[in-house]
Length: 228
Image (tube, rainbow, N blue to C red):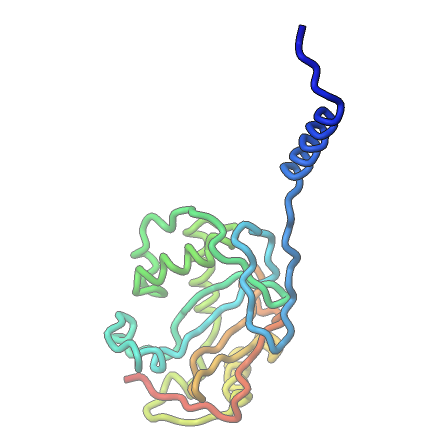
């Protein structure tokens, strides 16, 4: 005959079992944080590879980057604006990153026209492309289409000396050169009062769309060095 547990001990055992069962079946889900315009952009957790709202096309001003990275492969081409990335973005200012470990394109060299640095291509795929819902080749083909859809204003393509312009003037030049792009689709980045990038918000077919909660350069004027 099995030995019976005393009633108090049996009650305690049942209570502990119930607590353990409740703990193992409960998962806390962190609440999303919506940044204000004064807050930095906040990366959404990689596990939350949810749908995104639009793409942010970042066109980096190569002369400013090359000033501190003269040995980079892109700097030998004396470019003006170059493709930094096509980034999934949300209207609330958050964005997904590093959504999977899926491998990048099997032949990165076929995208050397937009990414001469294969290391940057792999970084862009791992960080942003894996969140696009596209296969690697489809993602980079879309990035190429988006990049070539934006006409660089002549002021920048013929620049032979450093100039200074207010951000509104810089974005105005892009609007004049690209009739399909309005001011609501544009933003500009700057650092230490130097132009660093112009950004264009695009829908998932690479058409201009109004940006979400996206900050733009607030400097009164920025310096723009010419290609070296």
